[in-house]
Image (cartoon, rainbow over all chains, first blue to last red; front, side, top):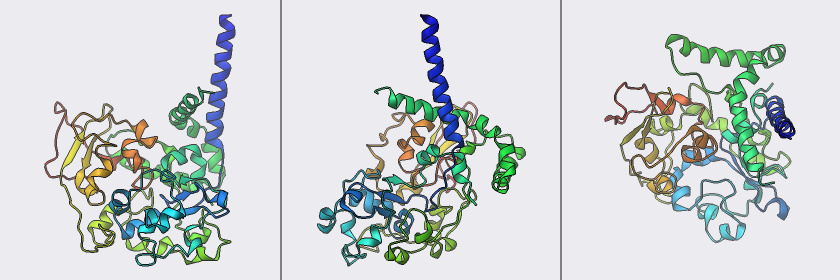
Length: 141
Length: 231
């Protein structure tokens, strides 16, 4: 009985470690977008739009973090804000600036909705993402 | 299925622990491939400072620096080149060459704090008012890690140049000495410092930008009066 338990435990450990090893060696060609680019695909795919790609670098050149993350109430979480076009047109979230006076207005759909269809919500190149596709992912041509 | 999160956690930790062994097993394979120059360059730059002064172990080679190419939006792999408007988006190389770079090239490769202090960028503190200025608080906090890593100097100054107090306090960090348990595991999983560092602010693989103050013997806690952490 004990040996049976031990064997199942062993095989489970083996499975986990082989998964880990496999993950270490898997090669995936990375997207080469910028560090911190956020893909937001809460509703886009379902609505037949491209997902939104938010370029952090572009915005932090122009605004401090505080403007969006304190004043406008953006949470520090990709996809965690349940942003939709209604709120934006209402002047909330992106709409606080993207109203045609500070930045381009919502009529320029594809400037924000620019991601490849089907791209999941993510912070591009975040540490966690790097660990999920490790080692080889950083080697490119 | 309720053991799945546990399993994921374990797998992640295993990846971390497994990293040196797994990579040590690779060199033969890699030297044959195209990756060789990248790998040797990375290991050389890591080895040099270590040889000069005996220091803590260089952190996790899983997080090797990818060659930064700063491709324009239509070619960046994330945006859809099929959309004509993608071409209108500003390419990073219109901006980045004018900004100070970090030595490691990690993250964007841009030293954002230096860019702000040098006046290379003037991000607005207020959405509408271009003249509004940040309320900068110049107070550094030294945290003493349990490991052999150098002490962490947390400069409020550089953080309050970008952020409001309410961004971190009290949700992420309790504003009270000794009230915050911080570990690298938590940070890598996106908690505590990892809410920004590793996503937008410089990643945790730039160990020495936080772990910047050599350990002091017999003086467990010390506040840096000058507020001088490396930017």
